[in-house]
Image (cartoon, rainbow, N blue to C red):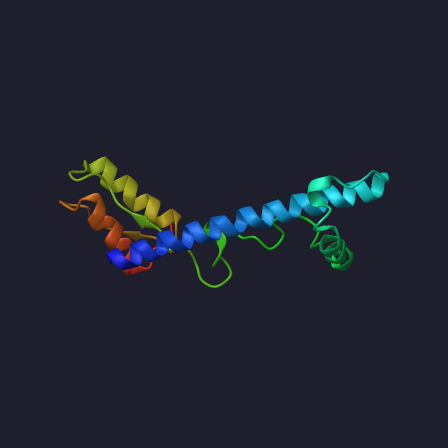
Amino acid sequence: MLRRNARLRREFIYRKSLEGKERELYEKKRTIRQCLEDGKVIPTELRREESKLREELAMEDTRTATYGANVADDEYARANESEPRVLLTTSRDPSSRLTQFAKELKLLFPTSQRVNRGSQILPDLAELCRSGGVTH
């Protein structure tokens, strides 16, 4: 499980670095597009990449020109594939009112799963969520 967690962390950091590169590329394209529209001189730091960026600008349409058009947050990455699964739990020694409230919450979220916490600690609950395919 430690290898899996380490792999997930590496993948997350890699995705964030790619997102940063995409954002930087978008800003460069936006700057060149603005300079071309206004008839201004292209900044010196972008002159080396100007021809490549102009080619990419020529291929873009209104949908692909916006930043983040195809970027999906991890929370919604599988929204169209399967229903979200939510895990509901209470404190270690819940009162009867808290137990009743947890039962009512389970009715509000149709795909939720209620677990009696008992003596489980947070890492055990996290492992339970990973093994059970809980999404939220």
